[in-house]
Amino acid sequence: HTQALIQDIERLRLQLKIEQWLVVGGSWGAGLGLAYASAHPNACLGLVLRGTFLGRVADIQWFFQDAAQLLPDAWWALARHVPSAQRGDMAAYVVEQVLHGDPAHALALAQAWSAWEGALTDRRASLPPSSSGTTADAALLAKYRLQSHYLAAQCFFPPEGALAGCTVLGKLPVALLHGRLDWICRPQSAWDVQQALPGSRLQWIDQAGHSPYEPPMATALVAAIAHAAQHGQFQNWGQPLPSGD
Image (tube, rainbow, N blue to C red; front, side, top):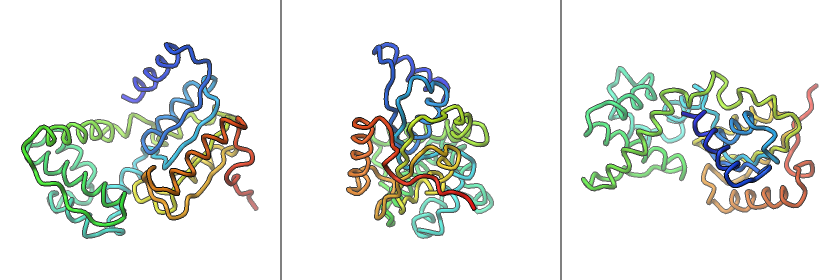
């Protein structure tokens, strides 16, 4: 569970005798980094969060349901494995079946899930991999069973997701990077983190999606970490929270 992961991270810091460190994470790692920092703010020099996944019900529903409007044909390649009566709550059905369903059906769903994830990452439809009956199938199913275990419990977060408890971060330097074309984790998530942390700075990355390997995102990520190393803060980096009326 998430609390155990946070404890593991802290054990690593203590084992390595690091007094404070910069916490960097992307996607689920960004949500986990935010949760870790909220639990251990005094151990953190700051945070660099890319394509943040907050683990809220709306974030999970976006991936399995609402993002269908972007690539309806690619979404259908997943939805066709789900009974029509269950398509109103795709996440619940897929997660349950991957965890506890018939092994052949669970594998088919995991393959379709992987293809849907790839389609949203690449912003174009892609074909699910064919079953090979090898250890690759077992590895793929294990990966999505692990994800299902967390998603079934809303990542073991309260309703507000990884934002829970982040008010303790105070003036901790926080840099947010989010691709304008991120179809996996909505840009709204980065906006919500910045709203919750008025001292944070946000940089929108044009022409970039969710992958850290797209050149605009990779360049921006390296620059943000270098900025933290040089300045120890993000005052002159990214955009501040817009002031209200």
